[in-house]
Amino acid sequence: MSSPLFPVILAGGKGERFWPLSRQDRPKQFLSLDGSSRSLLQSTAERLVKFAGEWNDLWVITSSQLGQGVQQQLPELPSQNLLTEPQGRDTAAAVAWASLEIQKRYGDDAIIGFFPSDHWIADPEAFKRTLDAASQLATSTEAIVTLGIKPTFPSTGYGYIEQGEKIGTFNELPAYHVNRFTEKPIREKAETFLSTGRYSWNSGMFVFRAGVVLKELYTHAPEIIEPLVKHGVDVYPQLPKKSIDYALMEKTNLVYVLPADFGWDDLGDWNAIERLLKKPDDHNVELATHVGLDTQGAIVYATDPEDVIVTIGLEDVVIVRDRNVTLIVNKERTQEIKQILKTLQSDPRFTDLL
Image (tube, rainbow, N blue to C red; front, side, top):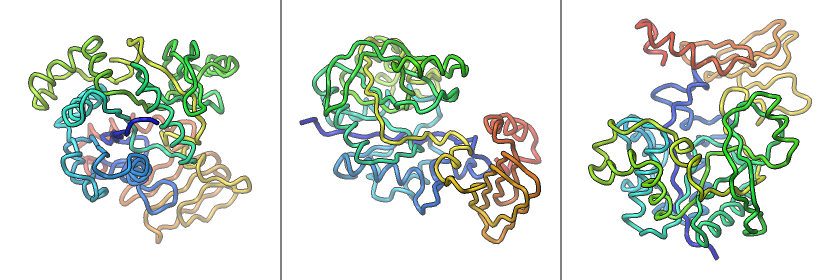
């Protein structure tokens, strides 16, 4: 039987590649992108509360600008379990601070899981089985357990985890020592990864004992953990901005992977809407009033049901209408939305669009 898990939701992201729907006052995690009435953050919290058992065991870490929005979205969350970062310093600082706070309250043996706020999970029961397995591994071994996703296509947008030696089976799932992490590869390399059967997508979800991760942070990222222990959250603006993968996961020898298959998408950009919602016979994905002529492979979204979007002769585009902005972009170039936002940021005429 595994120990109780204290889930921590990482909810400080901006979700810029979902602009103009995602903006500073309404980031991606506050949005509903699957046609339901629940935001991504609410769906993530409800999924994890069922696993943890009660709201008192759930934690959220976010930016100070989003703290009030998180409270409005999750009124059941105890205020002492909401950590608001005074300045975003990437995931290494967030993991270190949340782990310290949980260790203070529950001790070194507390099992902690970290989960992005904006992922989609198709099979909650399979997800729970995987978390049970990760908790069992973290309880029985000095382990930092990553949840790997069995790849379904040679993605160039995800990082990859190469599995090494098998170290056992937990809740009927095999666990492996991690050989290495690889950043987003070119397509040819991604195809090679899939052909070996030894690689998983890096989901950004991981589980460990509080004492284990803090010890490893002291070893591999003292520039982050030591100032936090000495000075508390006030030191946040002086901390280096590093991802947890770069600061710890790629350096520690205690990292293991559980290749899992519970239906997953990180909802990285507008193309994710098509992966979630398009039916085999649909020409387009329409979350708007759309009248189209000779339009194929389009994703059409509007927040106002009275707005009508009319298209003629378009193919493989994303069209988003939100408030005072219309975005039209080829589906192959949605990653470049972040670049156009930099242009808007540099022009005072457009600050209200961000």
